[in-house]
Image (cartoon, rainbow, N blue to C red; front, side):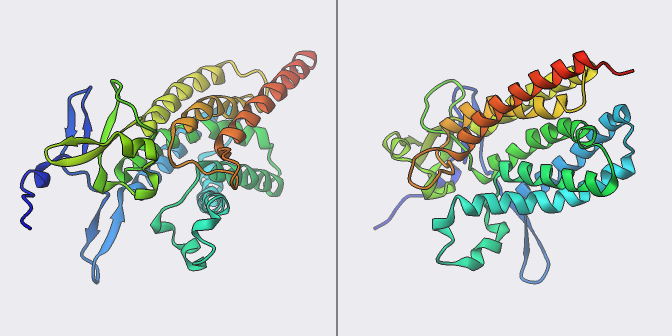
Length: 300
């Protein structure tokens, strides 16, 4: 059978029909002429850019806390290592069915599978240990790093865009993103998405919520809010707990839209939604208590 692919070859990989935007060829990376070719993924480049710009933001905030750029660089080297490790462990634990029969794939980070909450948990533990060893105040170091984490997350979600992942369920709204079906891992295509396949230029597309974009924009708003709060900071730890509150508020609803949720066994409960909701409650309670204590024991 002869199949005319001339139209499909020219079909865009990504469309935003409501915005009138089309991206013809969306690469996930590029190949260096080393050996048989060494592929560099844009996801990794974006993550590293996020760390770098996050470090610069932390240096800016560190001036307020009396923490030097050298100290922050020393600390962030450890964070870089352990946050990636934590993000991988978190992902594997809640995706164990995908790895239990092929344990070597646990170590294949290049194959994908990092969870931001795992990275955050590992970073907090790293901060606590580092402060213990260096005899620093945990909340001062944590406070100056939180705006930088938002910077990293703003950029990091665009790595998901290049990988055609971390999208939501079906929508035909103004911001709907059409992704060429052949670009998407089949496990991320829910039945609802499959039932609403769109056709354009001879190619099939899924029409999804661009949740990577929602979260990136939400983090941008949160960055502005947290920097504003930083200018009027009342007690150490306020920025740390405000970060957990703001990020949790966004993630608890955005996660509900996604089709690639990490879930707790067969319960159908999304891990990130449950964790976000818990952190929202804890952060509110802690900040109320710390604010009262700060008011009753003013500095000086």
